[in-house]
Length: 477
Image: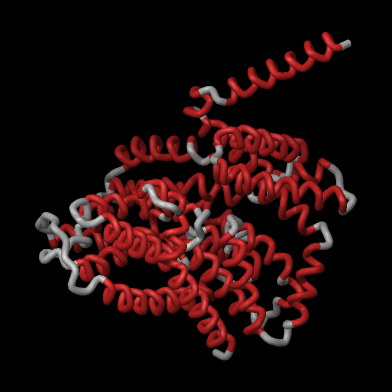
């Protein structure tokens, strides 16, 4: 009996070890993009055809992607994903639904995952067009005054962030790290953290390429182009305040760095190209958003690739675009496991949460203050910021709020609520210790992520409260 148990135990251990070795295979990791491509293609065919058998295949394939991604994901995302799956499974089963519902719930965020997967193509257009290199020339100052460099860095990060999304942070931080290589470490770290993470948060609150913007549009029913002027106003207002306040902190400080002469003519051409690219993209998004029944996130995801190809063709950079874009997309998707775990496990959690008693309980809380919009907005901000501090991504919080806010959402307050959801969802990204932006910055700078929280939490609070103020104004106009 004991021998049998011992043998069975070792057989199980051996099988588990073989399975893990197969999953940790480097060939699999280098070809992960094939798995994503197959999943997204099948999902789109199912979405437009409605073939039931194909839907079942997509569901099980999503679960497979979640399991494999789990192996390669970081400890933080394993913890977050594990929490989402555990709570989601408990909610689903206790509400009377079966394991089939759990599996199908995992695909609810596939449009978000596909959107994130395709982002490198629009970034590649900017890179192969030489636009990012020209823009970074604007960072330096002939007299090496730190306060002047701060204003230029904020503008550059802001401008690139609209197109390159999170990769803009990497590009600018790399340039600034080289520019400040002879400066004190504390000065360099503070400058980079404040200039890049704050500017990025301000830039993407109105970008159609930002997941949180798309999620808010779909959950509130407010048109992106109705939100756009209010988000732009918030972005510009907070940006001017922050540049004024923070530049004063660096006033009178200089660094020792070489100045490279700038080709003004090339720089102007690059800026004009970027503006034309932005206007063209927004025009295409507006056209399809107004003339189709697709969700906003899925609409933008489907536009990214053909628009990028068309832009590269017009720029006469198509061959370079194809070569660079393919490699960039491969590399991006081969390292997208953290986001796969986040979005797929979030789908399981959201589906289970929506079928449980929790939304009703939270709706009661919001119901107590449904006559006081300011309290609703403050509750939204408190929930987004509070959960972000313990590692819950704002995307997950907004997914929860999309269900909880249904009873208090009206035609009159939908715009105000939408503004606060976007502004707070991105405002906390500059300070959240477990957020993607802060984690990436902390790793590259070899610092504790809570140092980033301490430096930027004041900014996040000011941005959130300003968003609430703008939302109240929008209610009366």
